[in-house]
Each structure stands twice: as structure tokens, then as C-alpha cells.
Image 1 (cartoon, rainbow, N blue to C red):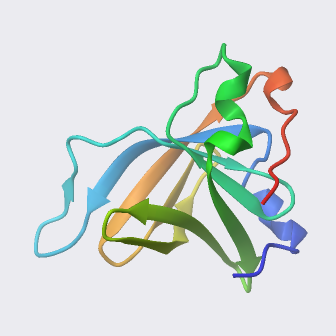
Image 2 (image 1 turned 180 degrees about the vertical axis):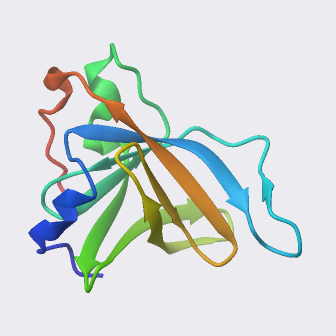
Length: 136
């Protein structure tokens, strides 16, 4: 997927914040249910169409947001649609996961597919954490 070149995306995302996974709604089957146990993840958007997926963030540990600790990804905003694509690895293989923005407010973003929705809550970052630029 090509990286973002559309500045309209900054009306939706904030590159000076981090987004914490707050809930996952499983919408597969007849009943929609929130998953009770979810891993905490964080999304960090960068101004050049890159997004990092972090599995750990500590607001007193500057190195916790080092992009070398993130799973690399990209985002693109085109024709009114925001898509993120992240890389994953597992014992069965690896590849890319694409998610589309379903809903957004000033406080959260919801990404997902026809099977699930992930809600990310916007979290302030200390200014000193805004020093990193990813190398992917």
C-alpha cells in the first residue's frame, strides 16, 4: 500500500498523540460481544504516512516509543477513507493486515473489518516523546 500524501487526514488523526486500544467488539455471527481479555496495544501515527503498532508504552520511559520497538505499518487517506496496514508475524506465517476507519470522534478512532471493531482512545504524549522518526 502506498503511504499517505493527503493532508486532509490530519483532521482525523493527531501525530502528537498515541492511541491506546480500549476495546474490541467481535461482530462475527449473530451476537456482537466485547472481547473480555484484550492485549494492550498502542498506535502512533507519524506525519509521513507511517504508523507504528506498539505492544508497550510507558509515559516515563522515552525509549518505549522508539520506532525500532514497533511493528511497522503505513496509512493512507483517499476518497474520504482512512486505511492502515500493519505487518504481523506468527508461527503459521506472516503478512499484512488492513483495517479501515469505521468511526472517529475527537477522543477515539475505530478501525476494523466485517468481523470486528477495535476502538483506540486518544492519549496525550509528553513533548519529549515526539523526537522519533521511523526508518521504514
